[in-house]
Image (cartoon, rainbow, N blue to C red; front, side):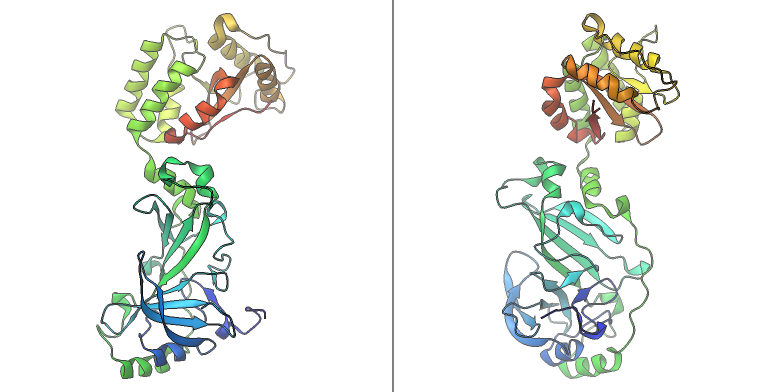
Length: 378
């Protein structure tokens, strides 16, 4: 049976302004009221998953002859209203695109996202959304679990593992206190209110906060960003990267950068400006896309010092032209080095050179810096 072949009134789509065809912001908690709100589903009293790790008494809503409920409803204390509508399998669809067990966190986007964080013990990832003053009448919580072969605290795992986490629960919060018709409601009045309002059209959704372009991975990184941990990473990088500065002096300059700059982008940009008096590279160097290839070659040779690699002569007139970086990176890699680039969030990138054998170590080291550091491909 195609669950989504019916008219919109009978669908199983969940969004910020409509839940499975019901577009009233609040929902009375009684079997008759719920059946009126969702006439296309079978309603049964049942034990359902609660908001936390435990189960609680609630209602299970079944689509046709399915063995598992398509939706579950929990109550809001003794107010007479429902607290949430949840989906725990792939029958329902969230935000027009996502189903439990199918979507990975790396592919999940929510323009109304307000928060992305980790469960108390770090075992799962929580993405929250819905701002009522922007037109959303429901709030959301999407839970993501790591792959079966992954255990431990996800906060220590990094973005690659986070992206592989799978949606395990869709929960929409209903009956916000500010939009209820009364503070409390009894079963009889609940039925009357549903009959009165259930046919109303969903209100248009206003643009959401669109934090981090709706990408929870970016928001998770921002939430974990610690200037103290980022500084530690750059100090360790000063011991690993190939550069022509005194290590102790370079570390002192790194610490000075963090005294006045905290954001990942500002730090990366300021580190690239750490020159000595002769304007020769110390640690990192900035990339100006208008420079000639010979300038880039001179910077690379300066950091390599006695280990300088013979770089090819390039006919291009600027480093921005195709083939320049690829040729230099390939030549360096043949000699056992990587040319790394850090995205500063501006038109300027900063570069450093390291040994190829340290690539995996540096990749992990750069996670707390949030600098989006990658070795250039040859």
